[in-house]
Length: 442
Ligand code: AMP
Ligand code: ZN
Image 1 (cartoon, rainbow, N blue to C red):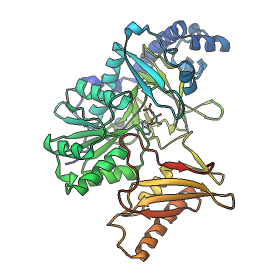
Image 2: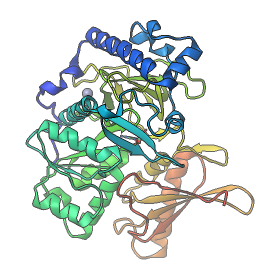
Image 3: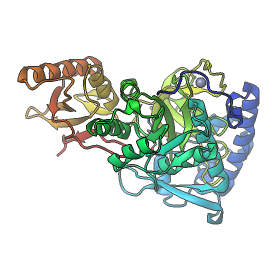
Image 4: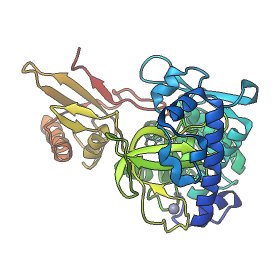
């Protein structure tokens, strides 16, 4: 049975979510001043960069001064690989994680004991917002290891007192058996992997709606409202979004509350700004742009104005749940996952939305880009057929393909070719999914 749509009881760990505005600003200012001093003293890259801009820690007197600070980018973490951004000596660092970049070396991130405590706290605050309690049994199907998802969720769920099943990703049949036998009430995973779990359960003859699971905690990759609807209907749960990135922490930088309408950023620890990705100019709340995050309390690896590449908007309105910390809109795209097809900007999430607007369509798809003989880009979308949507006649297949084609074209403004493929033939991911095959330069 899905979790009810009511405001869960207050839990003291979430007190900072409700700080009056002035107190929150005061706390942010205090933490920023301290953090910048440390970063300047301990990290050469920050010191050099601030000196170059003519900014010293003394110029930072309140949170409003944050715009005086230089940006940090992923390339800075690569250039200082592996330990160059650390502000604490290795003896104080108790954990390292790494995030695989698209090319070459991973980026390395570090945590002191206190950093891990903050991580546990913000993940616990995320879970409390959904309505998860110490009574819940949490099956954590995020990958354990260098990826921050597994251990991040694990720490927070344990801190809240949940019963954690540290199953990690993969071995889907066993996931379903355990979900059923252990009476699991909450599952955390990437949304694409959970869709796969639903699929597998169908094939095993298990209706997930009959199981006691009621909460889903999904993040680490973009997912659309249509996928949320699919998951909630098929599994009979409420599906909640959690956001984070290794450079700042991992999961738990922000999370939805019971209203499922934007993710609250835990801004007593991570300060959000929106900038114009082209010029770097700060933009007011309510405007879409690139999310920039600064850590306010991180010790091992402070981040000054980290450019996330994630595109979103900070909400101007306060959430009806009563939290004073601001919300960001769900992240559907990154400034670097944009495909340029015949000069038109296309995001994989738009294609997902187009597919799932067609009733009975499967959420399993792949985008293949090719160069035609005429030198023009062609975009093909392979979508798995479902029994619900087509019978065995050629006509019904063609009609269904056309329906999806039209639905996608309406959103992206380009013609696409949709090909239905046999069910269960497209690659499934156990972690973050990659749906794009670009053969244009081959
Ligand atoms: P990593 O540090 O490797 O876990 O990757 C972090 C990136 O994953 C973020 O910058 C986002 O692009 C993406 N991400 C994480 N959580 C979400 C989410 N809830 N919705 C959309 N994208 C997400
Ligand atoms: Zn809220």
